[in-house]
Every structure is written in structure tokens, then in C-alpha cells.
Length: 151
Image 1 (tube, one colour):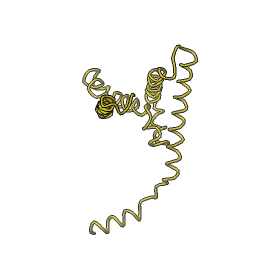
Image 2 (tube, one colour):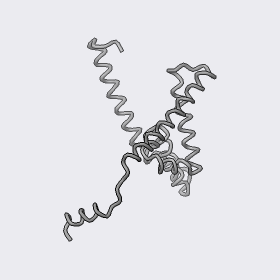
Image 3 (cartoon, rainbow, N blue to C red):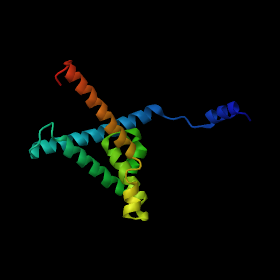
Image 4 (cartoon, rainbow, N blue to C red):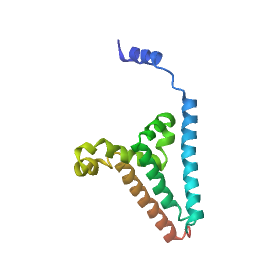
């Protein structure tokens, strides 16, 4: 059997992926996570001395904390299996990636296990976030310096 025959057989025998259903699930799960985040943001604005602009940081921290709890109790995995990318894209997916690596390596000890592996999966997110923020700030500096915008 050559490569082409194998690919045809694989295509024939593989179950069809329900793309529409998966998109709907991801949209709903991601949307619900965002609605919860917005409710938390409103909570901070209404009950504490935060504005719409300053409520973002404690909201993100709270969302990450909730995802850490859900991951620790094994519930975020079920959410991810149901919602796919809808659970991975928001900031809660970042929290899940961090705590999952920590839980996986806890048997190796706090320093070498948890400390050495906690950012294994999320490290690239942090690096690319910092690098892209640098370049956005650089473009902003150039545009403001030459007078294109008053940002």
C-alpha cells in the first residue's frame, strides 16, 4: 500500500468531524466565560473604587483564580473537552495551562517539579506577549514622535 492509498483509506474510515457543532460549542463556552468576566468586572466597579479602565487587572486575576480552582477540581478539563477552543482562548485557558503543568509535576517537589515546570506551557505565551507589546509600543512611539497621532 502506498502513501496515496493509505491517505484515501484513512479519509474513508475516519469519522467526520462535526465542525458546525464544534464551532457552536466553542462560541457558547467562550461567550459564557466572557460574560462571567464582564459580571466580575461590573462587581468590582460597583462595589469597590474601580473604574472601567482600572477594573481589568483584578478581573483578570479573579478569572485566572477561578480557572485554577476549576482545574484543581478536575472541572476545567471537562469544560475544555466540551467547548474546545472556547475554553482555551480566554485568559482562563492561560490559567489552566499554568496550573496543569504544576499539578502534573508536583510529585517531583516544589522547586524542581512545580517551580521548574509551572510555566512550561505558558512560557511561550508570556514571551510572545512581551515581545508583541514591545513592538506595539515602539510603533506607537514612532507615530507619536513624527506627529501622526496624539495617542
